[in-house]
Length: 284
Length: 287
Image (cartoon, rainbow over all chains, first blue to last red; front, top):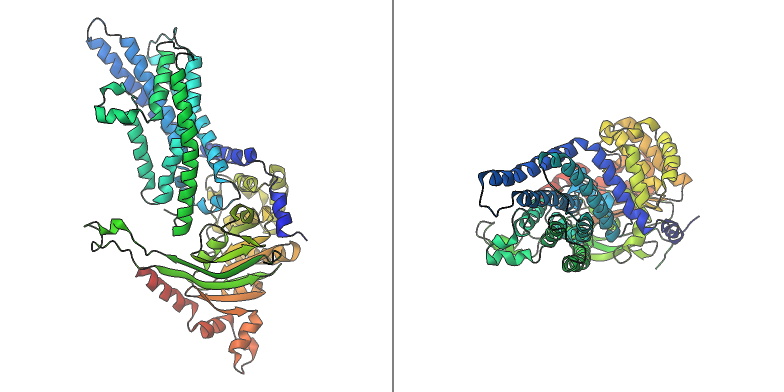
């Protein structure tokens, strides 16, 4: 007959990576089952990308002076919409970690599993990033034939490294936003969308942050999305090398190093509070 | 502390609501006072122990505190007072260790509806450290004993009936070989056949596995059929505890024991029937 402690020892065999990967597999299964929704989001992403980038073409057709470079504006907006498609997908997937479980009715069974919360959130973050990469590449592939863009001077390595480095900070931000549905079962999801909206406003997705009023521009400095967009545009539009964008990479590294632990610790504190007040119930 | 005891709860209490809430002082909220509703005590000074390989039943009406108690033991709620130890480990301070020892079946099966039963079992198995191979080997055996064909496990959960989903929930709990199984009204809402299948499986698990079971129910017959010992929970307090025979003796007052139903025992020890208790609790909740 096994004692409780012996049984527990047997169960410690699952490595951290395996535990985190269980969430990646689960989300992949859900993604396959909800394929119709994925098509909806893909169509929305493509339409959004085209609609906004066509604005640049119209500006070019109407003419705004000899020095105006239409192709640069097209590329500026195309990168903005694609990066935003990526960032919003990452933010959605991770920040809805609690909402998703409540919706399915599995929150209690998932949260009582012997998985450290950091590994649970890590698994959700890995899926969020992989999912966002696939969706954004598809949008890019569908949208690109609509525009005559010369990528001759683009430095794709710089763009890829900036996106990779920036994904950590966005994951940290998303985990922080994911705390809201834990704290506010009824309104938290909408509040996490508000976080996305603020990031969209201050980060220079569709315009340079220099056009923002001074008081609003201050917030652009604390949004990691500002640096991701700056680095990727620097790589693709201006052909900047990794050496050229190192201050941006450094800023993203600092954001990631701060936001991920902050996000996880805040989530754990919120979970403790939810366990104290009874907010970890199945329904919101 | 006896670390061989599967469960020991001492003076556990839990209240909800109450306290200071500044949003209530806003002019458009309530009467403009920063006070919330008074706290409602849901579990009140509850103490009990469960021995190895025992099925311990907690009987009470809806709202009597059974599920809150289960959530405290499952590490999903923090008690306001008292402590719960699983094999000597505190559920609050040694949460991760405790979680690896227990699993739960609730009245609501709680699955990812569009994933197949197998995908659900693989996920929940994996987070408890059970390999894919082990899930694929053991799940068909468990489901067969529960009277469910393995083919059904390959369909999305939403295609399965409530009874079939509950059988998958029982399989999910057993796959992780918990040393303490928490069955929170596992047969509520099931058709008679599914109910019987689940009940006989619970008896079988106790006989064949090294599992201790805490069962909450408001079904007196089920409690008497399955439980070695029973505690009556009313208004968040344990008002009586013992074997079904002990409890009958407490109220017999000269009557033959076989004529006394568990419903009668509950009424006489709590002063009301389960239905009355439910109405009273609903009244408190509405206030």
